[in-house]
Length: 211
Ligand code: XMP
Image 1 (tube, rainbow, N blue to C red):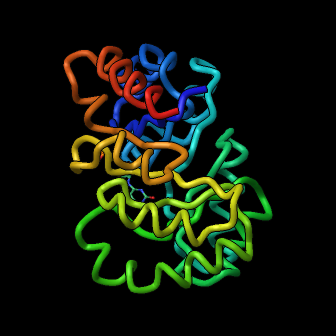
Image 2: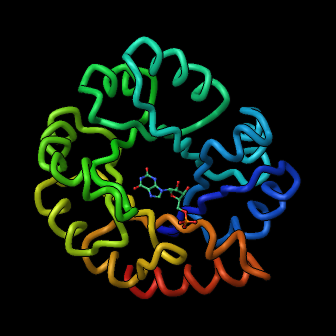
């Protein structure tokens, strides 16, 4: 099974479906974020699943009060999302509201440089929360493989480590898989390339070498 997740951050429905279809052979799942949902509507989740048969991760980074997280998550799971990404820093009740409705992935550290300002200092607390709640997985930064190893070493076995930041943000698939990531997320390096199928295929081969 592949360990590659496509971050499909385009607006346009046709383009999204086209890229998803031509790369599907190399993917474990497709991640949709606000750009695609805003550009094409929530029904794109249902369509992506119909076209590819792959799991869909809704990267909404939910960070609201429990009731609002619940209202949003309900509609997104109803549309067919298999997983929702939620922030933990708003408190465990907000995360639990999502987990009660479906599989959840908690952000414990982000991949961009700004993550060092506020998220990284509380990563240990977010890991503790993840170990208590036992979500499907956590998000850790592919841009900092040493942090991926650290997060993996503190997490209960069985909780998946999912890492964005490979490609455009500078992370290397091999480094982050060696550090203990279960899945890598790649966006621009695939959807902005001249041949998304070929790019996905070559990252898939790299990932396979580490499996
Ligand atoms: P690129 O184009 O940089 O896309 O390969 C990366 C995708 O992943 C999202 N992203 C994150 N999501 N925590 C998350 O939950 C993170 O630390 C993080 N960093 C990047 C990004 O929004 C895009 O969809």
